[in-house]
Image 1 (tube, rainbow, N blue to C red):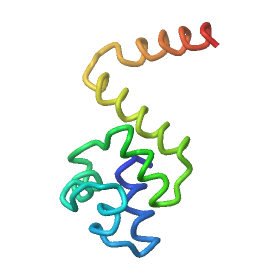
Image 2: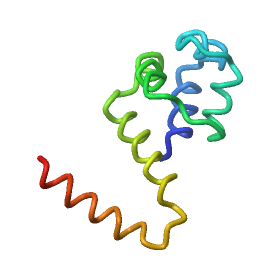
Image 3: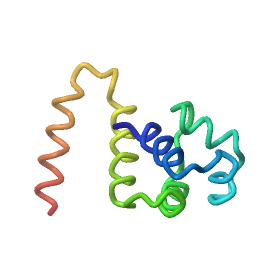
Image 4: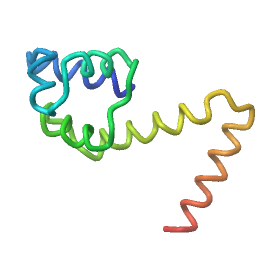
Length: 95
């Protein structure tokens, strides 16, 4: 599941309006709408607030957010998979 879908699904399951979520995280309704449509990405601080507002595990939400940032950076690269494999090796070495 992608971030925008999860956020929209959780909001709808909680029967919250866009404006209610917007108010909870101190942004305008249009931004929440754009985030749910995938037109804008939330900031890390907004991710924290959304996790609380929508009762989503913060770690899960943060992983999705980071994953989407990485995907956006490499999606058009011919060597994306190889670059990610190298990154995984580096991360394992640093553990």
